[in-house]
Amino acid sequence: MGYEVDFVPSTPMDTSRAKQRYVELALLIGSHILREVKKDMRITDEGVRELVVNGAKSFGLVP
Image 1 (cartoon, rainbow, N blue to C red):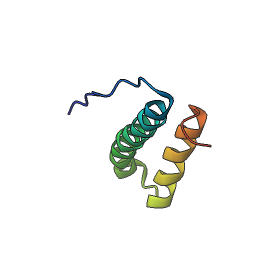
Image 2 (image 1 turned 90 degrees about the vertical axis):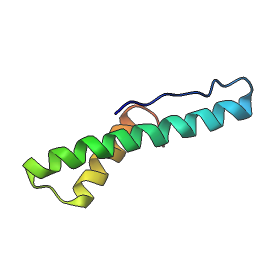
Image 3 (image 1 turned 180 degrees about the horizontal axis):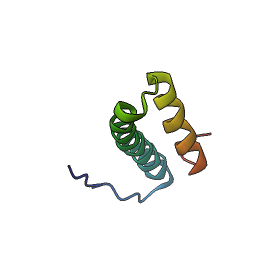
């Protein structure tokens, strides 16, 4: 599965929209990976959400 980012920010408003798209993409990819990991590790859905959010925070994608 591949992802292509086709939006290049050119104004301050566009930068905000681009950041939101990158956050959504990061969360989508992280959720997919962790869903697969969850099968083996037997962690809960809440645990998966927590790992994704903490990962996004560590990269400064969410406050």
